[in-house]
Length: 124
Image (cartoon, rainbow, N blue to C red; front, side):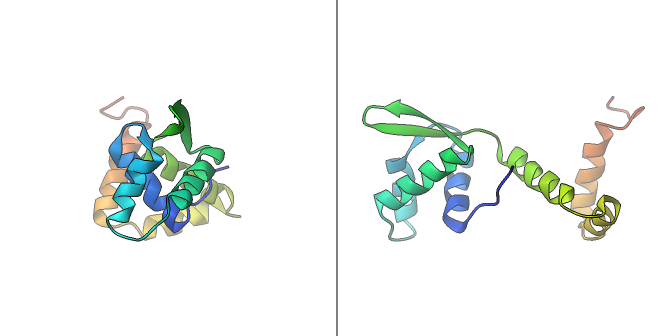
């Protein structure tokens, strides 16, 4: 089950997705403190919860842990989209409403992505 994230969870995940390397709680804390007052234990607790949720993996580094993402942000968002669609009562209607709301740029991106899966497409 893919879960949506709270504000601080989302901020921390965005930091880790953008860092592309294992990161300590202290490193995350330093970045967050540039924008807000926050305690080390708060960041540690949130990162531990993200680990428990299966979004972060960790390995010991001395007395602390280094955390890294389990999947890309795109894979996480795709999981949220899939879970949302699975929870709808009418997949076709849900998809139609989704497509109606796409911007021209999003529609172009969707069309490009679909070319990977359509038989006889120039890319297959």
